[in-house]
Amino acid sequence: MPLYFRQATQFCAIALSIGLFWNSSAPADQGLRVATFAVDASPAVGSPLAYDPTREITEPLSCRGVVLLGAGDPVVLCAVDWIGIGNESNTVFRRRLASAVGTFPERVVVHTLHQHDAPRCDLGAARLLAEAGYDKQHYDVPFIESVFDSAAAAARNSLSSAWTIDAVAIGEAPVDQVASNRRLLDAQGKVVATRYTACRDENIRSLPVGVVDPQMRVVTLYHADTPVARLSFFATHPQSYYRTGGANPDFPGMARNAHQQQSGVFQVHFNGAGGNVGAGKFNDGSPAMRAVLAERMRRGMAAAVAAEIRRPLDSRQLKWNHEKVALPVADHLDETQLRQQITAPETDHALRVHAADQLAFLLQVKQGHKIQISCLDMGEASILFMPGELFVEYQLAAAHMKPERNVLMAAYGDYGPFYIGTRVAYPQGGYETSPRASNVSPAVEEVLLTSMRKLLQASDSRVHASDFTDTIGPGLPAAAKASN
Image (cartoon, rainbow, N blue to C red):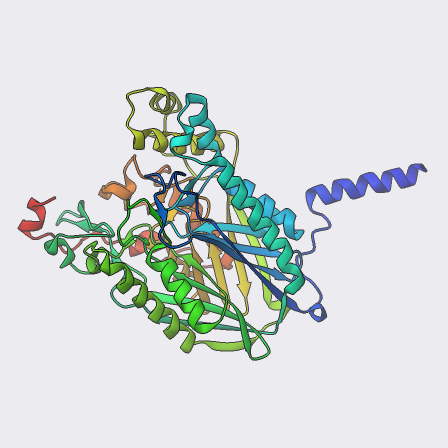
C-alpha cells in the first residue's frame, strides 16, 4: 500500500473517531422521515418488579419510540413503562438502539414513565447484588437484555416503513385535577408533610395544589394532512396505587394507550419534570381512581391536540444538540458504607437494592461518567431531555429562559441521580431531598441550568429553577400536623 494511501486511511480513522466528519445537517431536498417502533416490556410472572415479584400482567408495559431521519444522523426518542433505567443500563440501551439504526449514542435518548408496578433497570446495581448473591430478588437481567434487543430490532425494522413528514403541529392544554405538589411547608418554610401520590388524609388533600405545571403538551408529525406520530409530555408522578404484584402502566400509560386508540396516531408519552409532583391532592388511592386519573389525562391529550397549530417542517428546522455534564455527588454517598449495606445479611430487602443503585451511580461518577442532556429543535419547539426525578421548577425555568419558543421537557432519562431538587429545596428537608432519595448535592442546579441555557441558546442567566420553589407554603392545619 502506498505511503500516501496509508496516511489518508489513518487520517480518516482518526477523524471519524473524534467526529470531524460528523454531519449534523442534511440537505433540505432529502426530506424528513419518521419511523415508529414498539415492543412489549412486560416481565414474566415471578420476575421482580421494582418492589415485589410479578404476580400477573394487569395491563402490558411497552417500550416505544420514534426514529427521526433526514436531518443528519438518525435521532431516536424512546420511552419505557419501567420505574427507571439508570447508569450503565441507560448507556447500554442507547448504544444498542444507535447501532440498530446507524447513528451515534449521543443522538439517542431513553426515558421511563416511572411506574412503580414495573421493573427497575440498572445493570451495574444488578452486578453488585450478584456479587453478594442477592441479584435475582431485584433484577431479571436476561429479561432486561431481551427487551433491549427486541427494541433495537424493532427500531431497525421500522426504518423500511418510515413516513415522509412535511409539517409539525404543537399544542397544549391544561389537565384538570391530576398534578399537585408533594412538598408541604410550615410557616418557617420547612417540609412538614409529603403529599404522596395516593393520599387518604383529607386535611392534607385539602391544601392548595402548590407549584406544578398543569399543561399537557403535544408535538405531532404530519405526512401531508395525515398525522403519523405524536409525542406527549406531562409532569407528574404516575402512581395511582401500587405494590399489587400486577405489572401495569398506571394512569399515564393508560391515557396514552386510550388516546392512541381513539386518535389512530402512534404516540410516545414522556414524563416531564414531575419529581416533586403527584396526584395526591386528587387521589385517595382507591382502585377506582386509576381510571378517573387516566381519563383526565386522556382529555388533556385530546384538548392539546385540538389546540395544535401546524407549521411546515423541513430538515433545516430539525436540529439535535447535547451536553455531557458531571453531576455533583451528594456528600452522604460513601462507598464503604454502601458495600456493607449490600453484603450484610441483616440489611432490609428494600435498603439493599437501594444501596446497590446508589453505589452504581457513585462508581459511575468515579469512573468519569458524564450524564447527557439533549435538546431537539423542531420547528418552533425545543424539547429538552433531562436526567433523574427532576423537580418541576426546572421545567418552569426552561420555559422562562426561552419565552419566544415552545419549550417542552422530558425527565426520567438516566435514572442514576434519583431525585434532583433545586438549590433552595435541599435545606427545606422532606423526602425528595433526603439522603435516601437524592444522590446529588444542591450544586446540581447550576450545573443543569448552565447546560439548559446553552442548549436553548438562552442569553438570560437570571432565570433559576429555585426562583419557582415555594419557600412559604400554606401551613398545615393542626389536625394534619398531628397525623404526620
